[in-house]
Length: 599
Ligand code: GCU
Image (cartoon, rainbow, N blue to C red; front, side):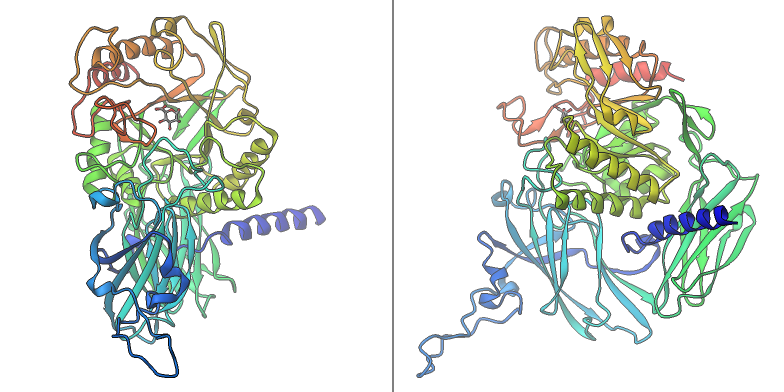
């Protein structure tokens, strides 16, 4: 009896752990929302005077003429801002590519949106941000709602009390100043696009609403759907109906006093989601006065020795790494068009998988991967020289991880949560990342964990010995044989070994080329030079016994402050197999031909 009780305690504590994560509203596209996207007022604030509370910016005081008040030699009503007369800016969208003078800007920029609302007494209201890079401070009608750190994950504030009937003023201070204690730190090989880079929504929900749910196949069970649903509000104990009409499934669950209930459904008729058949089902949840519909795919993902198993069958992940750089227009992606263009290029290359580097991409991208059938490696920007010994840095990393998992936990396409990229081995780093991996497994036991590691290079051998390898399900590994290290012709002679009986994904490999620049294959920056490296790379990749996937670095050229070479780079990393103008380079076809040989 005692053992059962102990097990029950562990189960409840773990579930409480799962339930008690970040409180993001699940499935924004399925909610009653008013999009606040469009033209906003904006004010650059280089030294941050607006935050000092002076000049009336936060209270939105209007400028008034100077009135000498006799006994008061200073006019305490001095106002030196006027958002009505300020420059306008588009939301969503980074500020760097919207205004020439902001291309290199790093600092504060104030955004203001005036909108009209007619709040209902039996509803609750939230402001939901898809992302703001890097730090956001948000005010509604002069009242500070809160702050958020992290440039690539959603956050929300309840505004039921602050929302006015009539005109409302939403004020956001966005600050993209890099910091060595940030996640990512001061140096990253991508452009630090600042601002409200994703959509902003006003969300209306019933007083007690279905705030969150997790509905996926149980680990390794092709017919067993397992999950949970969470209510938030005054009446937390309710009956909630979960239906999947196409499978003839329906379960009525009773939420407990904390608003939580387990979901268990089973069916032998499920068409399992896969790249070949990205089948999604309408899933409908309804409570006393809330009703939400989602499109969810059902698949299992596991490892067995060095194999990766999708729906129980071994799979080789043929892919590309993608930065959130918008094709053609450049700047941060945010639209369906951006997502569809990038994922179509990946598919044209023969991919069944994409690595969304080095940070969570916008929700449109992960829902598009669900729709188009591409498996996803999703990661948080624990990148390079993170301050692993600082608890506040860990807290930031964990919060971004939890926000990422919370938003996308019902997306079948996502099979891998990555906790790091190319982080140097150290004890603090191992402790930090082990904890992040444990947290990942606690919150989402259904998916695999990974990280992009570096192999130990010796004369003609690359070996996976990173101590973190013991704690991930799948080892990622980045290598640039032929570009940064060793002549390309040596690649096929390289021996690859691993200390761990686990699958490896070559999470990065590649070389730069200027699209349209042609010459001999020994002339660097030509497409021929890049292609020669790929011809040798694929010979090596074909002979790594524990390799179960590749994501070329990268699908498309992307902007980076580290890439200074005039004419060839001009702030672009040219490792894309497609240029940002949509030109496919020779190596695109070399990799496609290799992918087409992989089953
Ligand atoms: C590194 C890093 C990437 C970077 C790439 C490169 O491996 O992970 O973010 O862009 O190499 O040098 O191009």
